Length: 65
Length: 506
Image (cartoon, rainbow over all chains, first blue to last red; front, side, top):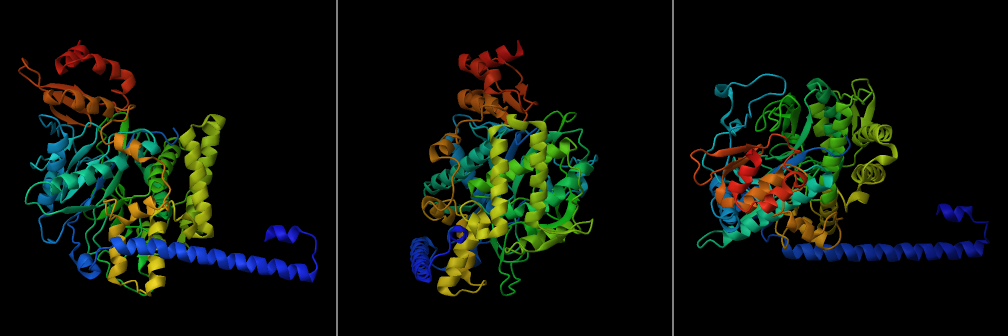
């Protein structure tokens, strides 16, 4: 964004076009991030211990140092 | 000095016998250590030599009477619990109710990472070997610090320091650093309060695993009334020259960058204290409460009040130390500063800058951020409250040492966590000692003369030689002697322990 401000003033038509490109870029990037998050959560879903409640309840340690 | 000094870490692992929450953890811990010992340690098993241990010596200049000490403080009595020395110079043993790996002495932050990560692999192998014993129940190990039900166990750091540095100066300048360094070194925790019962909405996650278990600013204890600055004075080196600063405050980290910055930045701050370089007083008002308050605010906006009235965030407090450290390294070394010192400074600055902007930018480097990011993604996707068991499970399973189940390992395998070392380098460190400390002598002796080593400890190797009535004790009181440069060739050409001892004592 900072770079764009340094550029000479454009006609309003050009400006609109630039904004549209930026918006679709952002949307695309967000979609990619969402897919990325889904992928890692899916992977982790597969390895998580099955009964969370039981697991957490039975994780009992004796104090150490 | 720089980031370089004699250092080492000790990690107590959480232990869980699958399906048997009431199993005796001392027995399970012994099974872990014994399984590793019997399948990897050659021939006779060397005992740990307790002669030089004095856990009740206080850095402030007095000894605690044994009668008033809590039984858990008497770590120098050989209780018959499993205890072995590895060929990499490390000690693997049962401490209280946990298996513990104490790394060999190293001299750089990257070597701290290397031999601590090797310890994770030792624990993993140990649990796999224990599972091969007929009739055994699988035991799972966790590199974390709390069960979130009131129990905490440690991940300690050790730094060799000059004896001449006044202890009061260490307390004064190190306490504010320790209150704030958790923004870099925290491992992250779901749950507030020692028993994790404080479930105030939107206050479910904190930066540090250990912060809630610290109750005093300075003291000798490690298992109760835990102090921010521990005063145990047991240098395992010439006490006239050195003290060993025993740091019990830290979290058990899995992220290599977290471990690297923890030892690197702490070592730098200690160097500045030793050289009397810190010209400003950053003393914190109410350090114990400040430690917790910082931990309880993962947005990093909490303001810590200094004694001089200033109010700074923990990141700003760290930036004060960074500023001092930059000046110190420039002043002492200029362009000749060693590579790791330069790298630690650059990474420290980079991490702090991004933490100030948006902590999530450090999700590939710092444990607490990686964990919080994952938890946040789960909360968003499944609409979970902080008291949901699934989030607590994620917290615990992040620290599971198994590569297929441990969530840290899964994130790292998916390229979401930055690595500093490759697997082969870490695996080699399971067996090979560091070459630049006395751990080299200890490790090589254990490897080459296993049959003749009766016992060993940080500051000795004791040989039982044929034809000799008494045991032959070789002291290793100087941590920087017994290196490859000193004894490598001697060990190479000594085919037997007799030949080695004869050459040393000639």
